[in-house]
Length: 211
Image 1 (cartoon, rainbow, N blue to C red):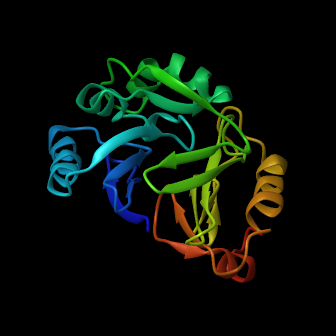
Image 2: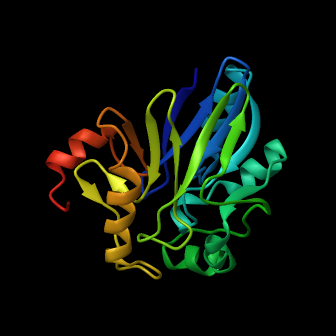
């Protein structure tokens, strides 16, 4: 069974998720830890639970979601797992960080390219990768069908959706990603977004004013 620990990191209040099961294998999704206090909070939890970090996975590579990549890479010797279309954001990460007041010298190296239909396997657990552009090129969601949850990054939020007015954003694509990739899931799938509280597919179908 997958356990999910949520941290809220940096000034943009990004949800960083640590997923782990009974084998103690874990993956970190969108490590957004920025300062020493946030680094310590993440590391202390992993040490307390005696977890073995297998991967750092990214829903997308906007600057607020990748601030902890170098720390995770150096601490646990795992590079980034991203969609190929996200590379452009990493190439501009340092200059983009400066625009938002962050000091980012580097990001971790890319170890793996993930794509639509891949299965992310760690311990006894797995998640399906679906490609969901519209908020940003390279946006993916991670779905676990056994426990009925989906990690959506900045595609779908509690009663909201991701911005489409940033570079590579496209509102039509975003609507298509949500309706064809996420709203085909059962209503009782829990949604773990990139910012804000959890929700469910059923709740968003009925209550999301953008949809």
